[in-house]
Amino acid sequence: MKRFLTAVSRLSKMINVVAGMALTAMMLLTVADVVLRYLGRPILGCYELVSLGAAVVIGFSLPYTSWVRGHIGVDFLLLELPKWRRGVVLIFTRIMGIALFAVIGAYLIKKGLYMRMTGQVSMTLQVPFYPVAWGVAVCCFIQSLVLVCDIVKIAGGEYE
Image (cartoon, rainbow, N blue to C red; front, side, top):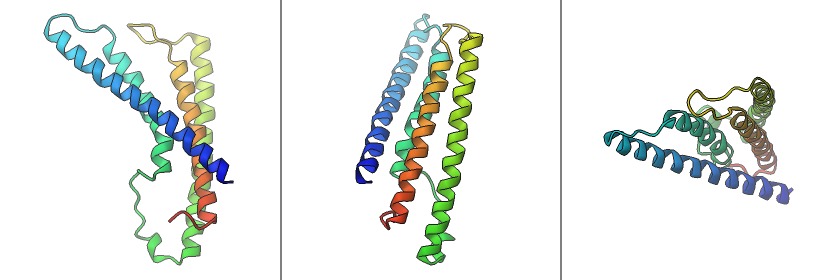
């Protein structure tokens, strides 16, 4: 089980690096567009690229953020529960999360297939949308794996 946890952790870190690279590219592109716009030569399709990049940043950073518990959590009610009940609540919420992200991932795969079939592309640069949808779908499935790891850690008493 330790190898599974390590593999999911590494996978989350790897795709988080992709999110970081996309965020850096978005920042550089925006700065370049502002400078060039000031000089009268804006970058064509900058808005489209930044919008697609935002989807990549959000989707690809989600599993690692969840792994390190970087999200805001309101657990003042949980702290009042006995440890075993807290574990039950945490496991239940993780199971619900697994189901949610599996459904979202499946929907994004289906939506990506539809986008590919219909040839949906961005207006200016004609960049296809389906690779982004599929990439975020994969990240949703990885997020489900992170939540499975949370359940393993909760059951093993390693979560707190």
